[in-house]
Length: 341
Image 1 (cartoon, rainbow, N blue to C red):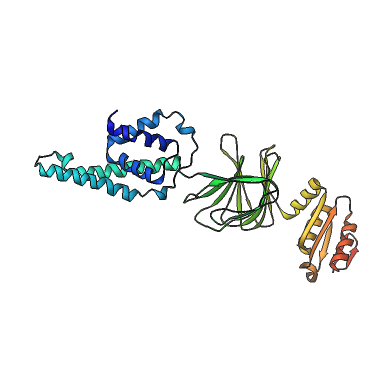
Image 2 (image 1 turned 180 degrees about the horizontal axis):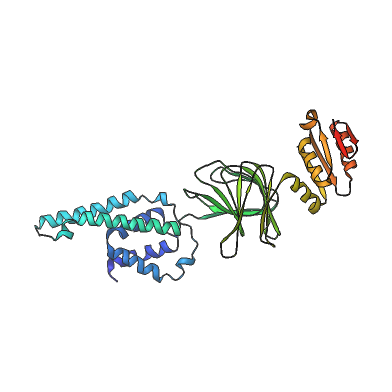
């Protein structure tokens, strides 16, 4: 171990531990790019660093390290070496005569190796926000995506999203309004299930202890993907507005539910049917599916809206009577067919 390398030992170890500043990272990058010996020495120390692959550390952002400036510094030193060689009028072999060119290529390769390494082990630190019911429920991600937690939950994401995808880990229940970016899909990782969107609004229920994860889509389009324990894709479903995507972790089943099926599911699981400022046309569609009846709705009443809550022990006649009273419509029955005017 020579004295020059000795000088960089502390800096290299500081770099491995995620403690060096942007200026120190710049200095180290310049030194590594200078020669193959430096690169090999750096690699040997990295290999000796036993916990290298297990360390989760915060490093300066890549854009804080001026790679061009680092290469300029390297080339300046190369120029100085060439000037010294020219003054001594010593004939050099091809490698020596093209030292700057070869060193420039080597430096570019070293930088490429560094960038490749950064892709696998980014300097980006991870940001985690946890909503516990006491702090602020509204939260905004770096890309402008807004989150409104409905209950306790946690989201973890890189300080700066990648150029090709915006990904985050999530558990809990929250309403998402995803910032539109057609070049970078937004992906939420929830255990063995992913939700991928481009720009949309949806309610995600992904409580860690729940048997089912659900996505209720309001606008846009999402793709839900389920994986097995080895990361292999099991199935995918596309969810459109008004539909619900359901991942049943217990049965390893992923499916899409229509509006009517969602309402029937709520009736069966929650023992209550809830309509929140819903159009009467949608309500009638759900009632027909749930109660297995036929209801004719006049066009004049289709756009009327209703907010109501019905328990599962109410008959279709009870429900329609309430709708007639609240929405100021007339409900009659002709044979087995209900008429709403």
